Image 1 (tube, rainbow, N blue to C red):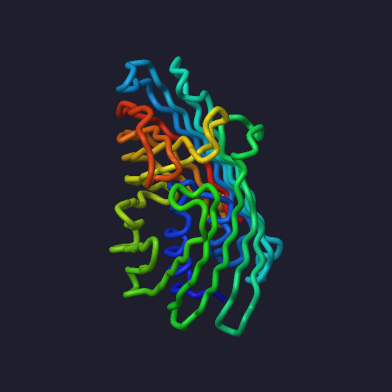
Image 2 (cartoon, rainbow, N blue to C red):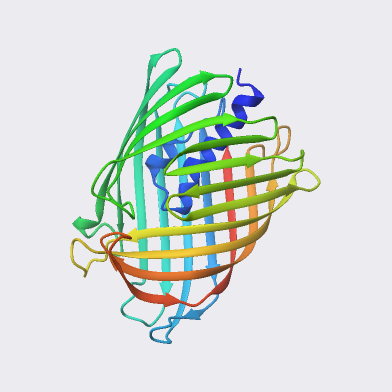
Length: 327
């Protein structure tokens, strides 16, 4: 049976791997995240609606809407080696008379995973998949990309361990053309604090009391994401967060080695309702929030090492709603 310590370790590794939802989460990223005990399905739908702003270069009106749906399934929740599959889709709608900006950008990815037991304390996970990121729905051959991951996990006992990762993502916003290595060491300082150290990201989760949770994740070289959540009367909680996102898309009319990238930062506060065991909707989470989007920028280039500004979008407030189902 999974212990309380093991559950905390699973949670903090998931923070590191799933936080890439803020950084163009793909189906392969979802499958690399650990599963909670006896869980077979994770599914999330989110929508952001932003107020109308303008582009600094033209003064033309620009209003952005973002949508995300992502889910993963495993065949046997009681088997830690069970095969699993995942699908992820992100859509950015751009409402503007500016002809330089496409009306819609879509990123859809899928992947499958197999886990092999090397010995009692070591597993090797193989993830293969692909995706499409562009403005012309599945009509641009250069917008297709491949996904592949190898994840070796070594458990050291007492909730400690490490992961060695080799990741290929043909739509990554940096070095999309080569596999990149990764490393995560996870442990727990005490009953309140769990952490990971690694490359390209590290994280810490701290629960100073039964009602308060703080999480922070650092991505090399400069990105920091964080959230603080406080539980009110069960099942209600409130939270505040800071997030950064960076996504890349192939535009049909552009050259084959250039992509349109969209960067955004968000400060957000909201309310969360979580169904508990014994409730009518166990495993269901509903959140409603409002926030402020800033440092919004469309750029063009091969990746973030070589990009030119296309449009700077004004800072604007937004509203967000989402539903997550886990069972």
